[in-house]
Length: 203
Image 1 (cartoon, rainbow, N blue to C red):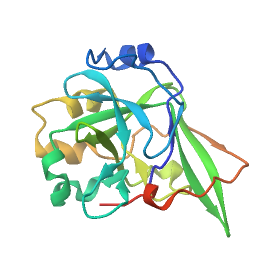
Image 2: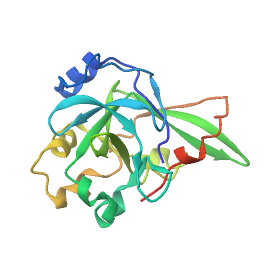
Image 3: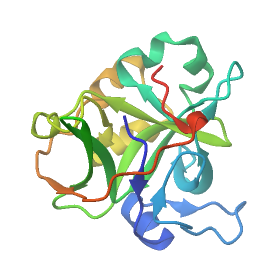
């Protein structure tokens, strides 16, 4: 599960990292709040190779809860995602957060890539909202949580945004990040409870 992430950077640096342009349809495109929670707006890179602003969390039409994460293993099997499989996107981030269970407590943990400032999550969008795809965790962080967002390397970034992406490539791309050089930092304060309709639904 990924229910908070951080993009502590600028649109210019994001554009340079992913070699894309800011959307001309968006005025004053900026990174509003570094810490992004469900229903917040964040910069997203689409298959048109532009950066636009979308809201985190897909509405289902059958309930009030938002789909903020989608399981890679069942993505192509769920009817809800069928119209979105070609609406792929990348969500830039500089870190994300998980909560490690320690007895009855949950410890908020920040996870970064040790050698990279900006990286990208694989996602899907409906032109207004987006969801982040998750997979099984890398061995080095599975003690923290049993899921992690799909983090794209340089090659899979290009493939994920390719309009000629085949269904076979999905299983090759949506896997745990290969680099085990994660920078892990446990934070002392417990998180505030989420509003019910911001909780994650795994599809």
